[in-house]
Image (tube, rainbow, N blue to C red; front, side, top):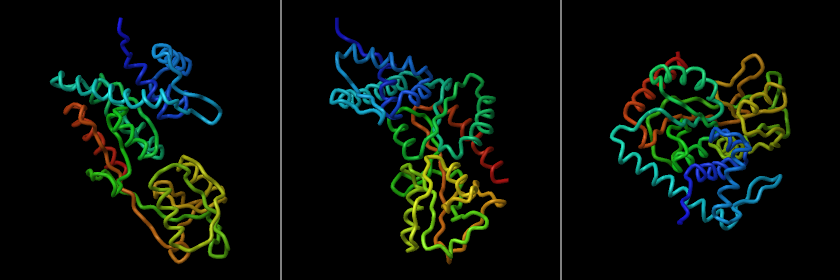
Length: 287
C-alpha cells in the first residue's frame, strides 16, 4: 500500500522549522509541545528518515528535512488552492492573523472582539512576529491576514496608519556630552533596526550597544530605566521618563506606515468585516 502523507503532520513540521523551536510551534498549531514532538516522530517514522537535529542552539534540518520542507510547502499550497477552487464561498470560520508584537495589545483588545461580534462562528488565531517574518508566513500559506510595515522592496498596499519614529533618551540624559552613545537596539531583522543603524551611521556619532531585544516594548523600557538611547515609535513615548532628542544631537527622523495584506483564499464576507473592523480600530487609535 502506498504511503499517504498527513497534511497536519506536514503543517506541524513547517511550523517547527519557521518558529525554530517546539514551544513556539506548538502555540502556532494549537497543540501541546509533547504533541508536536510526537507528530515529528510519526513523520520521521513514516518517511524512515531523520528530518532535523535539535540541540541547545536550536534546530538544524538534515538533508532529508530540507528536501521535505520544499515539497511540504508545495503540498499545503496545492491543498489550499484545491479547497478554494471547489468552494464557491470559502467559509470564514477560521482566520490566522499576523501582527508585530508592539501592536498586539491594541489588536487583541480592540479588533478581535469587534470581529468576533460580526462573525460569531470565527475562530481567530494570532501570530506575533516581525513584519518580514509575517510576510514569509503569508507566502507559505501559514497565515491569512497580516498587518506589516510598508517597505519599498514590496508591493504597495493601502496604508492603515503611519507612525513617526523619533530618537529618544532618558529624561535627564545629556547625550550631547557623551563621547559614545549608549544604544538600545532591536535584534530582529526588521525595518526599525535598519532605520536605527542607518541613521546612526549617517550621524557620524560613536555608539555602543547596551541593550538588545526582539521586542520594541523592551527597548522602550531600557530608555525608561535610564540605560539607553533609541529610535522609538511615537506610540511608545513616555513623556514622564523620556525626551525627544534635538536633531542637532542625532539628526534624522522617519515615519513607518502599516498596511494590511489579505490572502486570496479569504472569503469576500471575511474581507469586508475585517476591513470594516480595522477601520474602526484605526479611527479610535487616531482620535
